[in-house]
Amino acid sequence: MTSVSTPNGFTLDAGGKRMVVDPVTRIEGHMRCEVNLDENNVIRNAVSSGTMWRGLEVILKGRDPRDAWAFCERICGVCTGVHALASVRTVEDALGIRIPANANTIRNLITASLWAQDHLVHFYHLHALDWVDVVSALKADPKATSALAQSISPWPNSSPGYFRDVQTRLQKFVDSGQLGPFMNGYWGNPAYKLPPEANLMAVSHYLEALDFQREIVKIHTVFGGKNPHPNWLVGGMACAINLDGPLAAGAPVNMVQLNLVSSIIDQTIAFIDQVYIPDLKAIASFYKTWQYGRGLAGRNVMSYGEFPFEANAWTDRNLMIPRGAIVNGNLAEIHEVDARDPGQIQEFVDHSWYKYPNESVGLHPWSGITDPDFRLGAKTVGTRTDIRQLDESEKYSFIKAPRWRGHAMEVGPLSRFTIGYARGMAEFKEPVDRLLKDLGLPFEALFTTLGRTAARGLEASWAAHAMRRLHDQLMDNLKAGDLATASTAKWEPASWPAEAKGVGLVEAPRGALGHWIHIRNGKIEAYQAVVPTTWNGSPRDPAGNIGAFEAALLNTPLANAEQPLEILRTLHSFDPCLACSTHVMAPDGGELVRVQVL
Ligand code: NFE
Ligand code: MG
Image 1 (spheres, rainbow, N blue to C red):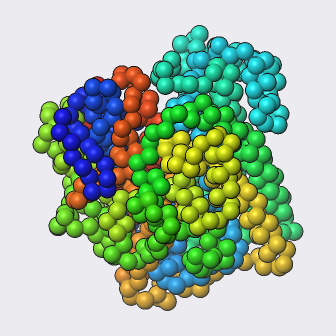
Image 2: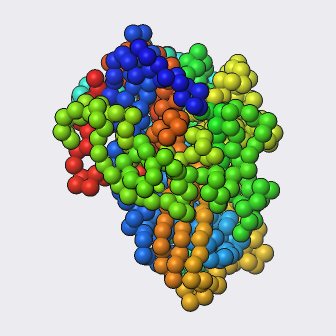
Image 3: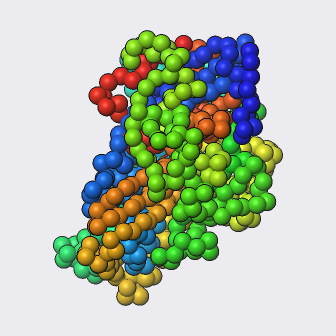
């Protein structure tokens, strides 16, 4: 086998057996992953590919900038609302539109509630089955399960009878041969380490979380009318508030709704702190020796910052979640991130199915181009529906390759916690230190697949408590007599300059999200989005740097080379969203690649 070194410090060897996982399931959208395994079934080369294209950036051209949020929001129904938020922020930035304090707080509250809900759904419904063997739960003793649950949490649903009922339901699924949501797992794989009781507890909470996550999004329906895709507004929020008024007096939000939001916040804090966090710790305690999946974690990480305390200011001191970039693992130095600077953020397409006039050069999003160019690499054999493997030396993904000062970056909860930790901020440092101490793990263990999963849980708890603070802030301001939620200043295009450019930044559940707009004569001249999964799922760049997914898969051994359980574990720890990352389906909607596990 011949190996090559990448500039960002990884060694790739594309010899040996090639395994194809397509589609990668329990994610949003369509993704393919190929790896080369050495003779010991250790991953030595990884290739991650987004296999859908949607063209949202192209659709926006020529439209009214005030409508852009409603189109952008349809980029994704999972991280619902964040694209709308990025969009209204980019338009407000371009046109100098200021929003009222309540609108800022409501936007923060909607976003924090999405973090809590999205992380909860990720942990239980998209990721838990990489760690939890559902079929093993049938062997559990409900009494011992009850004792385990009661030893780690005061959560009330923990009697032996409760767990026996769940086990009976599960047995019916299995006996009928219809496992429903638990179909097609790698049940029995030796990489599963939980005892049957822990598996039964986790399966029970999977079902409870499925019900509970619905409650959280009611907050979106209060302030935004519906979920997914709540309503937003350039200049504020569209929900008028009248504390004492009846519901139908032109103000859809009154004390009844605000009290509902408050009670959902209490339930969210209780579920995350009494179910999610104890489960996370219990599961992690059985996987402490599985220290794989580092990749770019703790090395090259970035956050744009989020949750402005006060409206209309994106300064360091005004952000609850800090911004910055760390490169080459130097946690002592946090770099300023300026999304306006063409020298900082660029997207490359020399390995992506798009065309640039000169593909050795990256483009800042203000001068970005989205021109699809689907063609398969030379090594690929067969017709469009008979593809054996991707050729990573050619174009191989609909995801572009974004870089920060030339570096591939990891974004998301672990990156945000790393930056908060490196800044010595107690609200990020203390929970990390406590978790590592409870598990008896060193600091470096944070920078793994397990650490990425743990950071998401800690962040869900952070977000739930932030929701409480935000709701209190909103109530204080409303009770002080400020009911404004929107400003109409600069609403009319006649008041706009002929040319304007803006940037809208958001920390979405999966990481750093940016929208860049160019407005000309009241219409959208150009629009670009660079989203969290574009960063994490990035293909190679002209210098040969590999992206976060690819890097994190390297050097991981597979317990069973027929079952890519460990690959799913690590990819899922990022919570990939291909709808977001490509925001751009094959033109004829046809099959792009054949589903196969070789
Ligand atoms: Ni569709 Fe998204 C988030 C955005 S992308 S999920 O979070 O933005 O990775
Ligand atoms: Mg884009």
